[in-house]
Image (tube, rainbow, N blue to C red):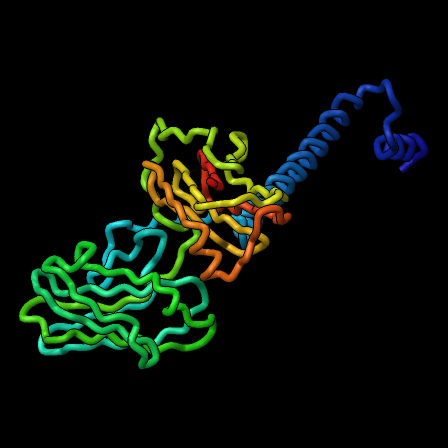
Length: 310
C-alpha cells in the first residue's frame, strides 16, 4: 500500500466533518438510534404506569366496600318482629303444647326490654319471673294484648349491666293449639333502625308552647342538643313532641326525667307528671332553685319542642 492508498483508508475511517457529503447518511443513522431509544423509554413508562395501577387497585382498603343491606322491618324471629319500637330482638325462644314454660339466660349490656308472645285466641294466665322473683301475673285477652305480644317496661326488670339474669315465662296451662314465646329486645341506635321512607311534608310542631319554659329545636340543626340554666318554677308536668324518628331526652341536673321517641314520620307526643319523677327518681327540685335543664337529641331530623307546664 503506497502513501496515497493509506490516506484514502484513513479518510474513510475518520469522523466526517460538518458540511461534507456523508452528513445526510449519518443524520439518518443518528435519527434511527434516537427513535429506538425513545421507543424503549416510552415502553418502560407505560409498563411502570400499568404496574402502579395494578398495585393501587389491589392495595387493602382501595376497593369500594359493598353496600350494607338495610334490615328487613317485616322479618320475624320466633313470632316476634325483629325490629319494633326502636328495639331489636337479640334472644328468643318458643314452645308448643304440651310445654308450659320457657327460660332464657341473658347478660344485659345496654337498655333492654322483655317481650312475651301468647297463643292467639286463648285466654291464659302467665307468670314472668326474673331470677326466681315474680314480676307480674296478669290475664291475657283472646287476641293476646298488643297483637299477641306483651312488652314489659317495668323498671324492676332492669338488672345491672353486666350481671347475668335468668328469665322464666310460665303459662297457667298448655296451649291447646299454637305456640308461645319469650324474647329479649335491646335498644337500637336510630341510625341502625329500619325507618320508613321520609315523606315530602312533615306534621307541624308549633314553636310557641304553653309552659313557663319552652325549648325548641334549631331549624338549621335539629339534632343539636340544648342546655339552659334556669330558675325552677312550679311544674305540674313536662310535655315533649317531635315530628320525625328520633329520641328526645329531658334531663334536670343530669337526671333523665322524661323522654319522647318516635320511629315513624307521623309524629309523637309524650307527657309526664312532675310528681312521678320527683318521687321515683328522688330528684327534689323546688321553685326558686337554680337548675340545669338539658335536652339530649338522638337521630331527630325535624322539629321538636319541650314544655315545662305549671
